[in-house]
Image (tube, rainbow, N blue to C red; front, side, top):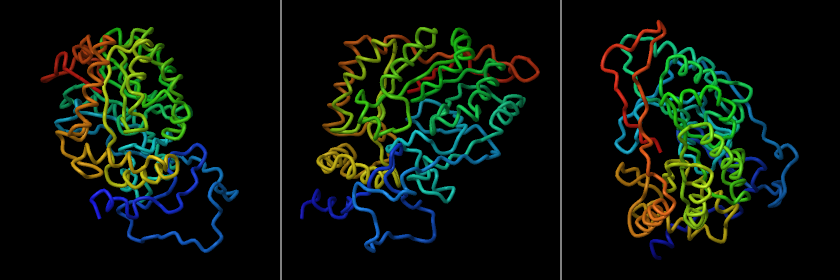
Length: 382
């Protein structure tokens, strides 16, 4: 048996579950911290493939209030270009099957699968905690990355408006931040974002994985359509906001063929910069993604995973800081060359996108920040 053959044994379900409409994950895989183990057994009463029980047709989103203890997360990872982030929600209704944040639901005793996209925790005191943090005399301002783990403008934000409250605090304090999203709902907050951008205090990135709407519907079912995201890039750009595109993730044989077309469309829409990240499959994301492949692309599942392993040292995932974002080896090098050639041809990444002005930050008492505040720090966000 070859190494590639050994990977195929029990890698995909014999009868993959039927996808749920409007959901990315096709299973509710157990989190790695759950004590009791569950195993599905076919007793003859399961619906045939392509059919669903009536009660299984609709999985409604539940939102739970959470009073967080802290709101700013700090990291020192050498491959992440920001040191502070803020996420107003746990879980994300967009349901992106590839989301690297899915395993965080395991900390709550929930599944990184369907639970992650249908059981959302709203940090209702986010703005209050942020205001308290920014008022501390010991606080040293640096740009905040908003919505890195879970989308700050996901559908539930329309009603909960937690992200809006956070932006209001940042705007009042002249505190720079950057945001990444797949949602057109960011346009709602242009009245705050555009003036901040004019002061050099805000920039945005829009994630677009593919221009194929049908494929996007299965990959990221409740995010804005690709065409709508292109309109958002244009809207932000016309409002004077520096905006880029993040092609993340690049999935071999799925979204990878679309890379140049995505860059072309985004450049035409007004994006000034671009970046990409190769598919990452940490922890429970790997089996969830394989189930998704078996359900949606059974004809190419083995090819996809074989190419992923080519870029991950023969494994499903390698967490090494030096390679986890871009991969390694021949195929990773080819992707890099394709990306760089397209970027040069389209005139992207020509302007410095990372300068955010910290000089006007003020505390709650409207006094200039004390201490070693960083002037014009570099924030090469995505």
